[in-house]
Length: 79
Image (cartoon, rainbow, N blue to C red; front, top):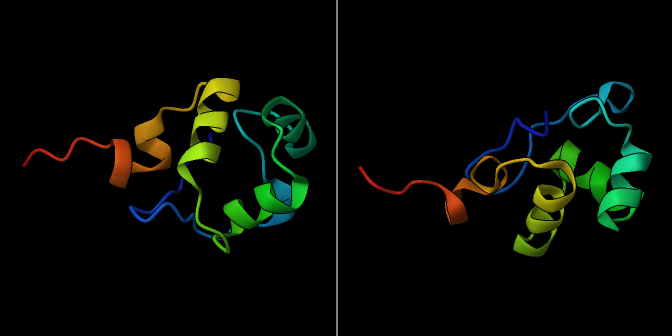
């Protein structure tokens, strides 16, 4: 899954060889989302914050819940 997100929209680092989204190879994720390979790797490594625009692209292309990608924006903020 496209998980391991922190509340800030950054991911925890993962080894490039093991990166996939719901079993989809990174290059296919790039094709489906229109996000560059470099940006996808930066997101997965936690080197780049996932913008709301990119979060929407991941959501639309892969069905990943927005609250899983950016809980600070789309998460349930009720206490």
